[in-house]
Length: 521
Image (tube, rainbow, N blue to C red):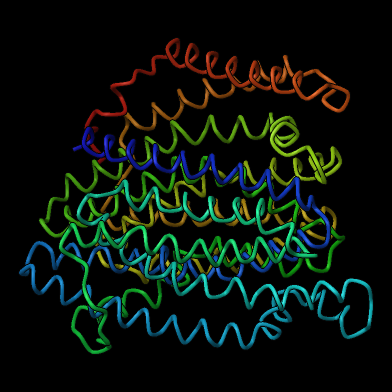
């Protein structure tokens, strides 16, 4: 099973890589267009709200509740009953999200006041930053409908993932990036304020993504007419699982919104600095953590349905082993190369050296929590696959409360960097609580092989960090752009070689990612 999971994970990672690369291209285009000024802060704000709700309705709590139930229906009921369930769930969720979208468009000033309180206060006092509140309210009317389209995209993607057709859903976000890039290039010159072009790019991205997935649903025999089904037995089951999971699986997103709320009181640029650093963090998180979590949830759900407890534990162990092998060196690399990466990728146009330097501090803080973010992604399915959403939500609430407290503690002395530190620490708390609960429930315990494996990865990553710190002595501000690209390429390739050599020296072998370890008893 580990080999099959690895192949599925590689497929998702490959599609995600394309999406993340285009996502970086998109961010480079945005950085060149607007840098980290007031308009950039406002666009990132207007884009973050519907994306937060997307992860609640479409990808987060919904997927974690829907996939286990659909897997159960797929294995125990007829094809027609499966189609009926898909019709009922898509119609019910679609109708709810449509209402939420309409309310969001109408109440955009209220939403902006809630999450951008600092701007709203400035607006009431006729201060210069009050213009941010007005612009954010208008942009939110354009970006909010993206939620309705992408929710249906999430439903269809979950259906395809359950059928082991992972590539389509993983590739779909590419189209959003293409839409935003195209709008930035072709629509921005039309508008006096470029942020409007980007907002329309988000709207178009939702339409295109949904249109792309429809033929694949038809091919799989799962293209159905949405129907209202609030009281349908399986819909009720998804509702019961989804409501608590709204908090449990989306804690990191809620924390990011809290960061945005506090950042609205900080100096101009704070939201943008956090955004650019978060985007670089999302690259390995999506490429490795989310990809592995995507393929592990249907597999664990099948293990649970078939009462295969040993297979369940071994697949969980494999997932943790994979994210540690990929996440520890990725986090180490981001920490020691934060500034050079930001400079090479973004520094051009309106994006200055100072912007890169400021964003590098929050990226370093975020990178300390990268492994924890990834572990939450693979540990939470250990509960959701068993249709237990109450335990993760309990821990999610604790982590969110801790994040709020840590925000206050760290934001006062460290500003926006303190917000990133608090987010990373709360993610670590969340991951730790999830693992301890799985151990106490007797469901999963790290194998001895995996503990030794992780120790070896840490040693290899530390060796890699030492190499980078020893070599990274250049003055990046005075270097030309070609020199920067060559120097960063040398550091990345060199660090990869050092990591591989160090891994081999300490005894790491590729087949250890495939072995079926025996869980600790």
